Image (tube, rainbow, N blue to C red):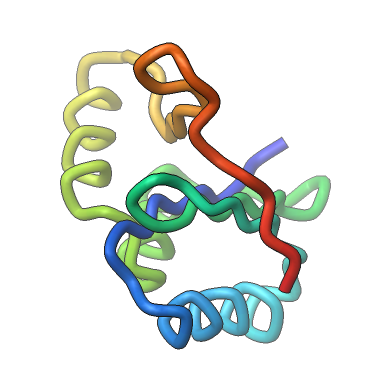
Length: 102
């Protein structure tokens, strides 16, 4: 199953709502939002059978404000055949996110 994941650090609530609205109304997705130490993680699963290329997903993540460093790291990882689209749930030995209901 394909998904769009976003690491949104240092954003205000208005920017979060904008991102969630785009996922809901532009792509018809139902995102899950988690508060982290520095901002939010957003995960939206694409419908079964959806076929987006890696670059399509990168462009969508860029449009939605995903951490540019994370996007650059994924471009490098992909070229090396390594896993991409990673969001950490545990950092420094502790669970680092709490689900947010919008």
